[in-house]
Image 1 (cartoon, rainbow, N blue to C red):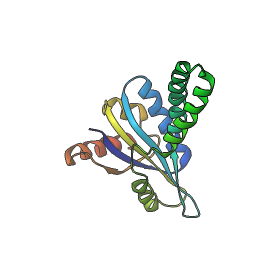
Image 2 (cartoon, rainbow, N blue to C red):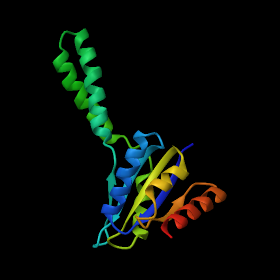
Image 3 (cartoon, one colour):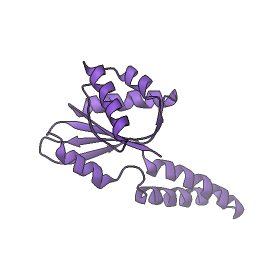
Image 4 (spheres, rainbow, N blue to C red):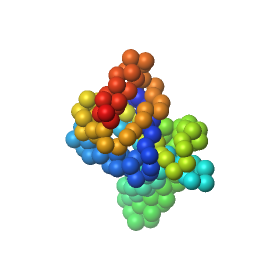
Length: 164
């Protein structure tokens, strides 16, 4: 089961920097993310979500592949790829997986204007190594989790120790 973790940061660039570090850690298999979104509370009070991956692009590529294969059967692979890519892009644009957008927007409304939060759906992680690499330089504050009370307290202690 994935764990939901939301951490507030002083601004969007800081949240995006942490997200880039997490992406690097994911390549090294220290953490596996199912979803990651930067939630921004703008100075005008509006909430903007910065999705980390584009399902449209992934779905369009998959659609083009399947469309090309089907097109080969009917001797029109280019037409099949074009139709498959369009269908895949349309399907990807309508697909919403990961953290619920309304939850993130509600969370964003609780942020102070000009600040941001990083919302993560973590499949697995080596938390001690992840927290050690992030260090205390980003001034993150744990906002919300679906961890057990003991796990959440341990995570808060690690974050507090890293920021001290």
